[in-house]
Amino acid sequence: MKKFINNWRQAGIAQLRPCPLPKPLTLIEHGKVLVFAPHPDDETLGCGATLALLRQNNCTVKIVFVTDGGGAGSLPEGSIAIRQQEAIAALTALGIQEWLFLNEPDGSFRNHPKFEQQALEIMQQFQPDWLFLPSVLDYHRDHVAIGQSIFNLWQLHKTAKRLFFYEIWSPVPATHVVDISSVIRLKQQAINHYQLPLAHCDYLSASMGLSRYRGLYLPNQGREQYAEAFIEAENNKYLGGIITSMLNTRFRLEKLLFD
Image (cartoon, rainbow, N blue to C red):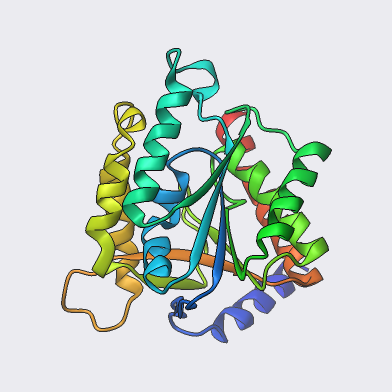
């Protein structure tokens, strides 16, 4: 039986394409884009440059910060207000003028009916063409929980035409990339507004490195290129199974790391 399964897998591998790279994502113009960010800075790190390009395409972009960014009690008093001020400065640098803070608890977000109703109302009132969520494969528990809860709402209510997961702590199995080379300095400038998080971790170097690595997926190599990567979801049962499988992979990884 094991030999049969191995032969079946080998036959499947032989049919794979040599290197199926993610496709360049054509950005919409004059559209409406809604982003759910678990914490202040996730939106800029994950898709800030893409959002800047969408703004240049005359899109309306709105950011929903889900948690208060208080660091789960690990940050000094007054940090919530500081992080919100930093978030506004970063979004302003990216050309974004609409945002909302929901002030759920940082580090211990749990999906609940009131949050689902609030998130659904935001989506239905804003009526986005595109929706951006944190990856359900991410290493941060808040990111996983928020990405999963909003994805479920999207599947049930079809609140946007297209949905994309962005990456922060864990790279996604990307389906699309966006060439952000023309606005990479703008992203860098926006990240620099988050001085409180930067004092604890060098997010700037990490983000620039990831964007440079993702730039390898772009055509026309020969110059320094940067990209942001996404996995696009589709509103069907098949994808729901894939997301469940991705979550199971995330759970198994944590068990291997900490058991």
